Image (cartoon, rainbow, N blue to C red; front, side):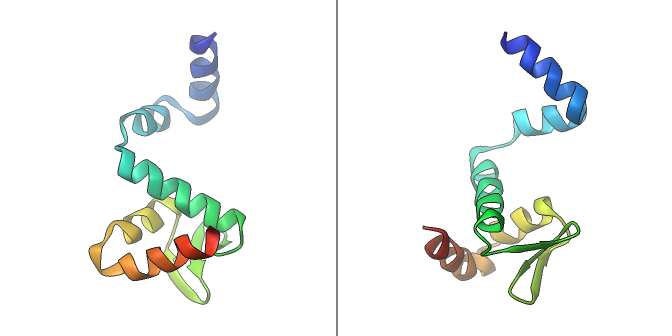
Length: 86
């Protein structure tokens, strides 16, 4: 059953993408979830593939937005976004 779902994911997203997600560290996974939840709750805005906080672009895609939030200089904004989604 699990193998079937994994096969479905590989078919849909490609083996490279699935392996990337499987090997990702917990911090990066948490930040990815933060970005997706913030988009879902309209705290962050997605225009095409770009991610925005208000009018400021924080990434050209979800992965670069995760990179943005991993940067120690951007922890204040990350905390503000966490506060808004909670």
